Image (cartoon, rainbow, N blue to C red; front, side):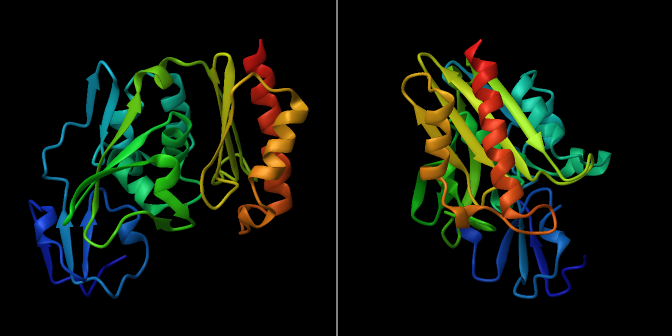
Length: 259
C-alpha cells in the first residue's frame, strides 16, 4: 500500500519532532497495510540504534524495534511459540517488530499475549516525559492503545521471575494457517496460577488465582471476568466459538500446570 499523502520521512526521529499528521515507523508491516490519508510524515525509528534485546538481572528488555526474528532467537520456549503464532512469511518475520505488533493492537497480536502473560511493562516516551504501563493495560480495545498523541513505545520489559516460571500455551484458529482466534497462556505462580486470554477478546484479560484453582473456580472467573460483549466477532471466528475455546483451553492449561 502506498501512503501517497506522506511528503517526508524523518530519520533519525525523536519525540520532540512529532506533530499532528505524523506516524512512527518501525517495520511498517501494519502501517503500510491500509490507506492512511491523514498522514503527512513518517518518523523513522529503525535508525535509532536501540539494542534489540538487553538481558539484565531483573529480566529482559525488548526494544520496540526488535524484529520477530530477533526475539524468536532469544531461546525461550514461550517466546518461540508466540512468535510461531504469526504464521508469517520470511519477509514479515524479519521486518515486523515487537513494538509494531503491540501498537497495532489487533486481538490476534501474539506479542500482546506474550507481554501480558509474563507481566510485561511498556516504557512510553512522549512530550510530557516517560511513563510505564503494564502490557495488559496498554491495549485497551481492538486497534486502540494507551498511547497519547506524540508518545512512542520505546521498549517492553519482561521480569525475570515470570520468564523463569513454568507456562502452558494453547492457540486455536479456524484453519491450520489462519489468524489466531483464541490464545490462552497459563503461568504457574506457586502456589497460584495466572491465566491470560487474548485473540478471542478485544483486549487482554489476565486472571490471577492466589492459590491453585479448581476447574470450577477457573470457569467462574472466566464467566465473571470476561463480559460476553468482549469476545471478538469477525471472519476468523464468532464470539460463541471463541468463548467456548477460551474456556476449553483454560481448563487444559490448568490441568497441564497442575502436574
